[in-house]
Length: 288
Image (cartoon, rainbow, N blue to C red; front, top):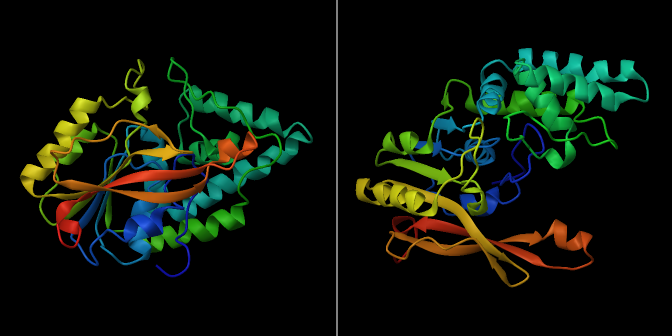
């Protein structure tokens, strides 16, 4: 993959930086890429940029996020213009631009879950990290040091993404198991499920935990159907294992990808390398 694929906005947990390494395990061409836990769809965008496939299905339980992605792909100019108005509006608050963020957040939480409001909150919130309270309300704080992505930068990326994916992508915000039911041989499923430690989330308006046994059973179903997959699931940092390995009975192999220095470790004055696990269908690996 020459150059770097475009992206809409910073998003904590996105696999954008790891995408070139993940794509190395994809076939040169395949029928359709399915992302049941899409986030901001970094892998789909990277696969489109690298011309691996021309058909995509993007799914995530965070429905406002899915609507944002759909708007970027299908109605890019409308999204750019609406976001630009919001972005400029914060400067009318003078030095108290943080108050503007809270005003937009309040509108969003009161039902105005528009693509531009979702995008603005992501662009302005701390570390691009989506956080919701137990009441299902967006509760992440703003990054007080910056004003969010400049509309000119955003426009360039959104138009590029739309050019790659418009007319080729379907969208949904449903349970991942329903998405896996629609997968067929010739498709490739990429999954980056929520961290295993959140399997007991009580409010699933936007997120639902994925119990280990349930998830492993869903992967086994893909094996039975002959559907290839790539799964980001566990890993190590500084030699410490996090997450439980998927069962060895599945028809896949675990490879470790160097994700670079842990940003959290750097803040603590340490230099710990993060290795993220990628489970690859055996049929995608030479000699398996």
